[in-house]
Length: 99
Length: 137
Image 1: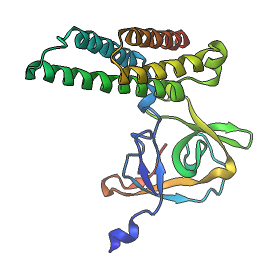
Image 2: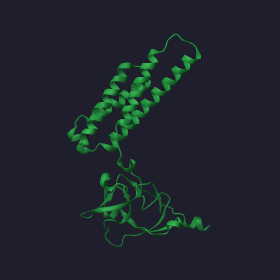
Image 3: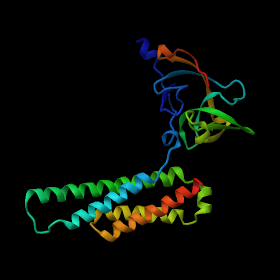
Image 4: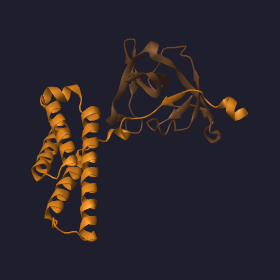
């Protein structure tokens, strides 16, 4: 999966290539997930999990100013496609994805 | 070959609507003020002058007026669709009407050289700006 956009900097940068694993456990705050965009289900977003509301997962808006930006949206956990686990490119940033 | 194999087939968006959630009606105000200034300067030109300098200034001022009317419109649209939320509408029931009228005025200013329309646009932007800053209190 390739990253486009800057809202996840510095954890993820535009052009990063990530390995995404299917969700095998419940998503926890801080997990970086690939999910259906709650505003446009035809595309995917990569966002940090802010918390949970029952079976729904809250996605944070922008990681550079989390306190100001609030939430990006809420998706049912069935819309979480996977967890971004590992960055394989660029090689200078090779390694696990940390929230 | 290896690069092609590793290249991801999926793109995921990590964008904010506006980087870091910074919204500000000042850009719309400056654009509306520029439109008004251009209308003032165009109206002050000698209508009968045919020299190239006057003609050039006229064309330039019209261009700037139309560009800034468009900028004003874009800035207002971003505030309308991205910044203001349903809870703001409860506080300002005429929010949608204010935006709709302001956008119409921006279009009118793009099409015409009309001092009254320019003043009305400035007032409409101020009204929206006042609502914006009231949400920040």
